[in-house]
Amino acid sequence: MDNSFSINQRWKLCTFTCLTSIIILVFLLGQDHEALNFLTLQSSTSSVSSSFSLVDYYVAASIQLQPNDSSLRLSEYDKNEKKSCNIFDGKWVYDRKASPLYDQTKCPFLSDQVSCRRNGRRDFGYEKLNWEVTGCKVPRFDSKNMLEKLRGKRVIIVGDSLNRNQWESLACLLYSALPPSQVYVDVKSGSYKIFRAKEYNCSVEFFWSPFLVELKVDKASGARILELDKLSAMSKKWYGANIMVFNTGHWWVHQGKLQA
Image (cartoon, rainbow, N blue to C red; front, side):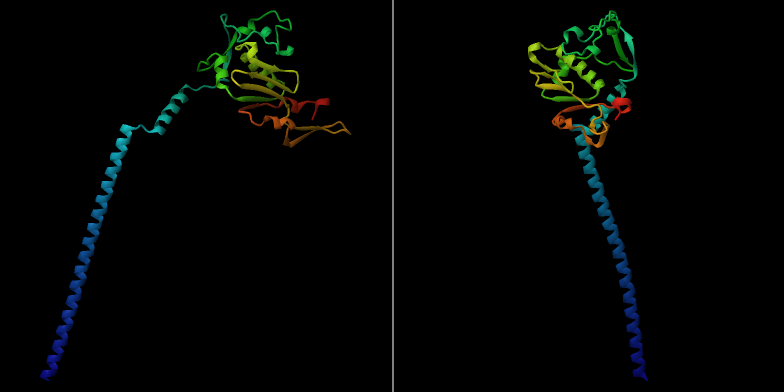
């Protein structure tokens, strides 16, 4: 009996000791895990704060030493935006002191239908009308400045008679700023005209193409057919231009023989 009791007591003591040890171990592990989490959090916080401090430092230094390009562009954009205006919003104003930018009689390639003086008009008051833009002042056209901007470039103007008028006007403006020996002009063809400033190595060309797309005439019926999925056959000559100006519209509503 005594021996049996002694064995049972030992087992109970051993079991109690093991349970107590396990509880203590679990408790200690829990404390160590919290301590580890705290240390890790503290370390990462310190690392993040220090990295932010370094970033702030370098950002501040870069701002002081080198201004941000995008902010400069934005400020310039704001300035331009405040000064911008719609050049098509304005009115014609009569100015007695004004003078035309070129003399019609001294532009030999100006067509008769757009030369009022050549057609006998006696009142020249319209030549003193200036376009005044609402909200801003448009600088007067400077032929030499334009030629400098077009140096080494090729400009093509394509369309109907409206764009032909634009070509004649621009060509005369540039022609008036140069001696005749420095200019080459060819207006013999009705479908192609060219102005070239030799010294500036630039050209302004006009191509007659009222529809901008291919126009074919049916030989049997005589009907004029537009092929909307094909550019004008003359478009091959447009390649290589630096600046292209197109217009179309008027010819699309023609009736009778000119209807397409």
